[in-house]
Image (tube, rainbow, N blue to C red):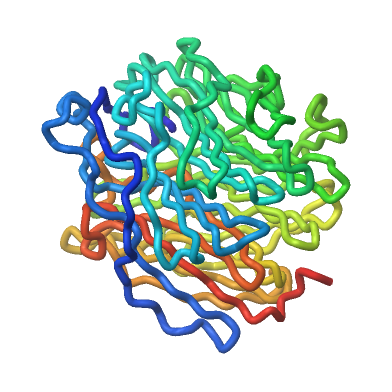
Length: 489
């Protein structure tokens, strides 16, 4: 949760109300795009629905940011031992709480579940919940849910945030009460990421950032670890501090190499304190640990971006997120992948960078995709057969008559990123409608989620009107591949 993002400040206050903690939800079918090729099949469906909260409930009445039915900022997990078990989560109703969607049939149907004790509207002590994350452990028997919970969320200056983690033993259909990893300290802790160790079922790594005043343009990342399946977590310790007064290591995530070493990948986002709306030059960096995260090596630069946001010259709006945040994943053969966007100097064509490391993060090679439009939030995933996919928003150079055309596009590569096939997988929506009462435009989230399948991958993303039924809805995409990828060689 970033209290101040893009060109706007968040204002939201959410106290308590009662809800039913689980309700079944059947999928509403959204028309699939034609196949990308004979070897890639795509299916997209809307999986969000209206608000579960009564407009007269106390927690809603006290929440100026309440936006009924709005679903934004997604996370996705597929069970590594049973790919029919899938979890999707997102911010619900303008941070009223976070939603978890659980499926036992590969995403053909979902049940909507709420984590008890999370926000005030689910019986918790905190006003706001944001930045959801879901993950399965190595043997698929446990699932994790993570989030930020917030008191006094009206502004970054007044907000006090905490980091939580919950566990599930039934595939995400019920959850224990949250474990508070980072208690409230009156400081601005941000952007949590959990990685379950792919070989040790009881081990997981939880990384988040501290952003420091004034301006919250500097800070460092910290790490907490569990070795007992999330029953307890270690005291947070420093991971990486860039040591500057105008940058912080944003959206850090740990990747686990086959030899057990760790790679933490961050976006070092720079900000001009005199002009917070200026571009945010960003370096994508990796730091390595060979002792389970107790110590970390020197930063390794993966790539960089000029940090210019997609913008609409007709209305003056900008994409309401730091678009240089990376997406990170590990391929089945152990290769590491990182994607990010560079919007360049104009609105004609963003470039999506996809970096790959074959030696555990020591060295990287980067290839670029031209999008022939503005682009945002490229999310990289690798199927079990080695097919690499990047899902991203393709945004028009400018709006016309109040319509800023945006659609979701997919790029796939069967040969580790040497060659790519691209095309849109949804109809266009109006980015000017993607926001909440607290953030009217143009907010979809800081990240979108994905998960790997043996022959494909799944992901989820928000879209606005006219496609969305409830203002901003979440859509689930299943991409099936042929099995001819290069990931196993």
